Amino acid sequence: MHDVSNNDLLGKIPPRVIGSVAIMMFLMVIIRCFVLVYWRQIQVDYIAYLDVSMNLLLGNDPYDLKNSLFRQWEEPPIPFPGYMLIYAAPSLLLYCLPFTHALVLALHLLLQFLVLSTVCLWTGQRLGWLRTWSDIMAPGPRQLGMSFLFCIICNSSPVLMALRHGQSAILIAGAILYTVWYQGKASVMPPILFGIAAVLKYSMVPFLGFLFLVKRKIKLCLWGAAVFFFFAASPLLTGNNLVGLYRQYVDILKMSMQKGSFNSYALSGYNMIHIGFFKLDVMNKLLIAFFLFLFILVLFRACKNSRLRDETVFFVLCVTMLPTYHRFYDLTVVVPFVCLVTCQALQAKRPRMAIPGLAIIGYVLLPMSLLNSLSGKIGPYCEKIIYTSSSMGVTNIFPLQAIVMIFITCWAFCLCWITPPNSSSYNNKGDVQ
Image (tube, rainbow, N blue to C red; front, side):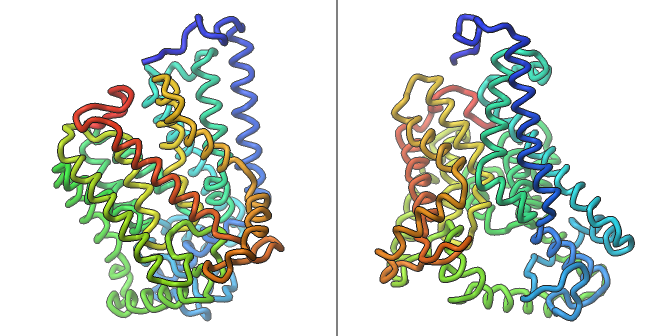
């Protein structure tokens, strides 16, 4: 594998200069992505998690607008009841000490920052940029490369959207990546984090679970499922009626996804990435069937491989987004893989396979306002067959995000398919024990 050395162009620049640039980039990202979000204090979804969690702790109906604690909701918030224990501490802090609102938001952003930083370090380690964790402190090309990686991931639109909304996508990404990349390092943590990822967003893990089963990681799946059901049943601890609670949760969830509701393509299609944008539903079903067929092919191919490759996990995470409801911020877990496989292709001197990745990286760094404006110009030509939506003063927005998600999934499938079953695409760093 290509290694960053003094023979490279950067080797001619003094390490202290490179280190100074790396630190400046790092600080600029922190100010851009975290400080500005904190001062705006618009983490609405996070407040919804706390609201539902606190109501469950009190034994109240969390979906009754009369029981709103931290915000006056126009429609019932729909966080999963299993959130109760995960968000118990911050919800209790905010409930008992209302003046700590700013502190609670700051702590949540700090947690997300730590997770994102760790994800970047893990990705750099997979690329071979970090032989030891101390390499990150040594000024030079490795440190600059890590700063670029941190800059790309944190400034990507999915991550910025997750930060602004207060979504759990960043925490999910950290849990999934640890589960995938460090199964052999700690036998206890992967199933716990896999189960927690399922609690935070259960639609993110079923396909990954199938992949683990194919790779005979039975204990990981069973213990992960046990963790999920433990958290899902936790409202029983405070006297909630579990059957009635989940029945109400499912009813509200279905209502929120009906045509014209806030989780439908007709209203929020500008940042949806799952398949559902055709007005003729049979077209949606055919597309979903096609990608499920590709998923089955990849599972069969994974059976023949003695290791679990990064390209396979990348495809599975991409195809996960298409059959069921997902928004643009859910791509947070995909962005590190895009950076990973793109850099691997460049290091292996396979630029043709890297071009789609570079295009995707450029795309996710574009402002949402610009993408919505461009999509608004396309929408009127397609609105007879495709749902269009409105946002930021732009009407008839074409569902560009979903089309891009399909493109990313097709590229990920190609990366899986061009590699012989018993080899890694670029280097043995792409393998998971």
